[in-house]
Amino acid sequence: MANTPQAKKRIRRNDRRAEINGNRVSRIRTFIKKVESALESGDKAAASAALAAAQPELQRGVAKGVLHKNTASRKFSRLNKRLQALA
Image (cartoon, rainbow, N blue to C red; front, side, top):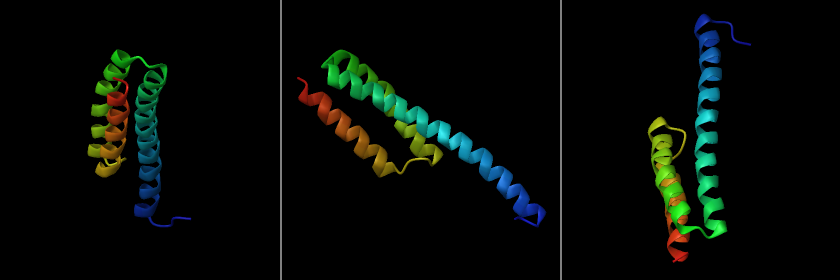
């Protein structure tokens, strides 16, 4: 258990940040799932629109520090590759 005021504050702050970051990651996953479901249905227009919406979310996750930049790039690249294969 934390004894110093600084350690107690750090615990409170970490809990708040964990909740916020969890919400961010969940939001990113939702956008990715929308792209994947559009790809599976074969609807290229919907998949393209969903990918265009997911890309800024991935970049925002990188900027906020919840995703590594290479992870976001890899996810976007793989989704884009699947979209191009629909043609």
